[in-house]
Amino acid sequence: AKNNSKAAVRLFEPDMDERRLRRQKLAVALQAALEKDELSLHYQPIFHLESGRIESLEVLLRWQSPEFGQVSPLELIAVAEHHGLAFRLNDWVLHRACRQLRQWQSAGFGWLKVNVNVSPNIFVRGQLAATVADSLRETGVKAESLVLEITEDTSLWDTAGSLDTLRELRRLGVEIALDDFGTGYSSFSHLRQLPVNKLKIDKSFVADLSTDQRAFNLVKTIVTLAHSLDMAVTAEGIEQPEQQRLLQQLGCQLGQGYLLARPMQADAVTDWLPRDGQ
Ligand code: C2E
Ligand code: CA
Ligand code: CA
Ligand code: CA
Image (cartoon, rainbow, N blue to C red; front, side, top):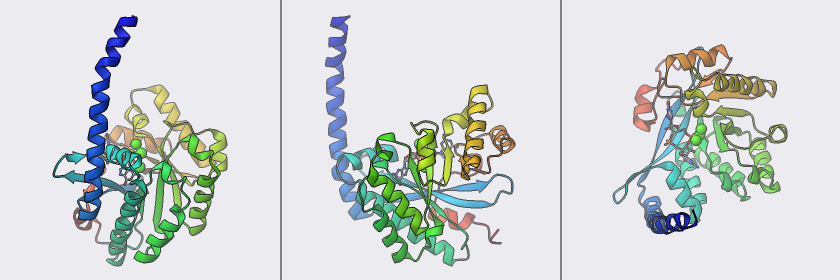
């Protein structure tokens, strides 16, 4: 067994080097991409399941690199975090999304909101609230139209700085959604303490909803928990009508997923938005 594990280590090492090398190259390319405007944003609608009305658009980062092809946003974020680019990237996304939202709002969709994903380690840095306030002011978007999505990460919530940041954001009027809820380490005490007003049920639970009794019971519990704390719940990753039906039966009011609408480029959203203003 000892020999085997040594062999495994040796086999693993070149892989690690390759990965590190790719990330280093990606970081250099990303820096250039930020300057050359190679990044783009897609928007996926979030719906009121009952009425079909649109609640918001989740902003999803896309990078079509001439060198690397389509780079997944998760890898992109990891690279940015490793190389000190997370803050700039976040700022770029936020600013671009607010500018786009402002255009839609001015074109008659004043009720529209955007949900922007924020990497958790951004919260530790004190400037987030100030950056958000800047973006809102520069683009003329009201704080009430902005929802920030953060994934749960205990190590973060324990730092006083991130709590302050959250409180400041709430004071501005920005809403906070806890993303991928159920997959992280949030405890009841976090939920009680954190100034969060929305929960997003992770798509892995939604995927198993109709086939796995435990997933069904968990979703039911999350919906009840959220409502008892006066939080809105959004289910992500709805791909089948049966999943939507069950979610509505459980009282989940908001949802998104390929069944309802895929992430789209801004132009496609403009064509797709209902002319009657809902
Ligand atoms: P997320 O925030 O959980 O976003 C949902 C992901 O599920 C998106 O993947 C979306 O395209 C995908 N999705 C939507 N509907 C369905 C469905 O019905 N079925 C399935 N299987 N998937 C669906 P995407 O765009 O690849 O993004 C992956 C992750 O990257 C996001 O997960 C988020 O954590 C991160 N991310 C994306 N954009 C940004 C960004 O601008 N900033 C930060 N910090 N993170 C971002
Ligand atoms: Ca999200
Ligand atoms: Ca999510
Ligand atoms: Ca996720």
